[in-house]
Amino acid sequence: MFIESGVFGGIMGIRKLMIAVAAFLSILFLLSTYTLPAFAAFDGAGYKTINLASFFGEYKNSAFVLYNCETGITYVYNYELAQKRISPCSTFKIPNSLIGLETKVISDENHVIKWDGKPGYFKSWNGDHTLASAIKNSVVWYYQALAEKVGVKRMKYYIDSIHYGNMDISGGISKFWLHGPDGSLKISALEQVEFLKRLFFEKLPFTIENMKIVKKIIELDRGENYLLSGKTGSGMEAGRHACGWFVGSVENKNARYIFASVIECGYKLEEKPPMGMEAKKITIEILKSLKIIK
Image (cartoon, rainbow, N blue to C red; front, side, top):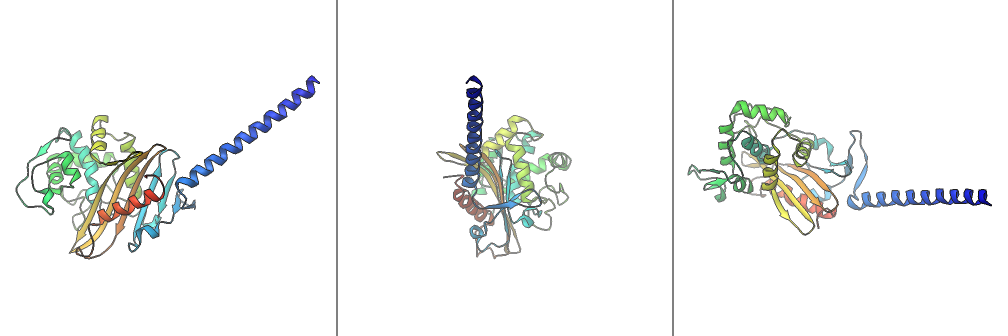
């Protein structure tokens, strides 16, 4: 009887273990399909592809990259464009801020640079700005002044250190990140995500304090259950829109996600708002549809 009961108990224990494993796997499956219902199979590059064409609509030449920091999985819409390097435009204000702080050209988020009195593209540019207000209003002249104070040698050192895109700043210290003939610096959506992963995990070659400052000044929206951070970027040339970016991070109670959205187009300026604004609007719609933000 003792042997029989022992064997019986062992069998029951194994059955309970198998049931528990099956339940655990079922939960994992449900979680993965709940957060990102649109994904397909892994592609050859090791990413999961998602179909987001309906969100981008008329912007046929667009791409989206989303990295789940908990699972380590990267989801990609339009891999061909996601790996194409284009001008970072105002998304470069993120590394530019880090470099300005690290070189002590600026002291903190409250550091003021005086306006030179020349009217800017937007009224919000006209006036003295701090680092925090300059990134919030995407003030180009502030970051041009910052870059000029950093200088070519130090700027190149840090761009190389963080392996930012093609690392080419030959277009001129105040123009290399902008779209146009002098825009020598290029980066892909996939590379934007890799850079931001290192920023949010504080793995870049900058002080922890400076990385925390930059993460703070790019916070955009704090909801009841999420924190959205990011930066837009818009490229224009010859009276037409050329490209738009929205890159950043969203953190909810379940996970942190890093994203990059990019649009290429040729609409006339009067036909559409800046493409960075369009990329931001579409990205938020995507994040809501995936129940990452509510």
